[in-house]
Length: 128
Image (cartoon, rainbow, N blue to C red):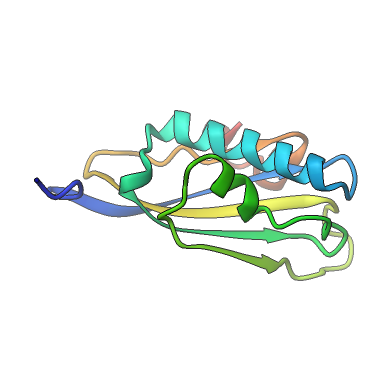
């Protein structure tokens, strides 16, 4: 069996989405949608994923975003959830993700911002 990362380099991609309210099902749904789009845009496979860090704003604590990743089959990917820094005036109800993965050297990460979180990175036109 060949190494799935042979000839590749380590990359990281960012993403974020807003959640309508602090509800476990909405947290899971929003996180799943975000991850599905990140996987699609970056042509990712779980065996090339190294780790995934989720943060959520202080107002979202009904469920761990990592549960959505586990439900999607990312059982072998180390996942971590943390609280986002509560900066006054920052956008509320946001889940952020930082996903590390291996891809070819000429790959360009497609950062993904959904559900109103696009305003967080309007400088990244490719993320919209």
